[in-house]
Length: 267
Image: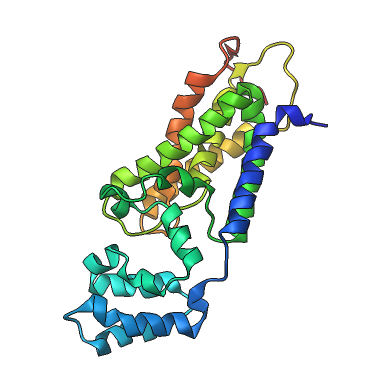
């Protein structure tokens, strides 16, 4: 049985993510006809000199449940207006807050919502996104926390999450897509866990569950493959790659000096 004190940082991060999700989650407003009607009615203000009929054709030709597709359609007609979030008048107060806490490269480039480089890593699209990330956080995080110590572990997680977001931003400075989720930081935990397999812990080390080397190698390799072969995916694989890279760098900075290198991984 793992003692709570050895994984308190991981449990704290899970709890924080769950609390944030419970506060800032609500049904997608685009599931209602009112949201679509609002877009159509207000589109002419944004799409001048595009005609109202063109705006209606754009919105009505897409499944109302696909809010991202609807907005992207409007963005393609008038990107400069969409970037200024004029169409946000149709969003609920909660979704406006969610957008503000999520990372948008274009806004960041223009000095807006700078804090989102931190807050975005605690935001999630839906419950599947949340719990998928939290399971990965626990599986990889317990081992990294046990090896680094709770304080260094939390510093590692926050630092890698921010650096992963900035890595994505470096390649997408004008993107109007919102980036949210803990995947960048968690990818860093995967690469850190792999590196730590090659360092022998101190003799009084108390073991905790950990992912095996083969699984970590395959998972990390897939992130690089997806980033290269699926650049247009709605998953920010570049952020995952950034997390992996900075996870390796940060673990060398923060690992305990008493840990000694070994040629055969501890598994």
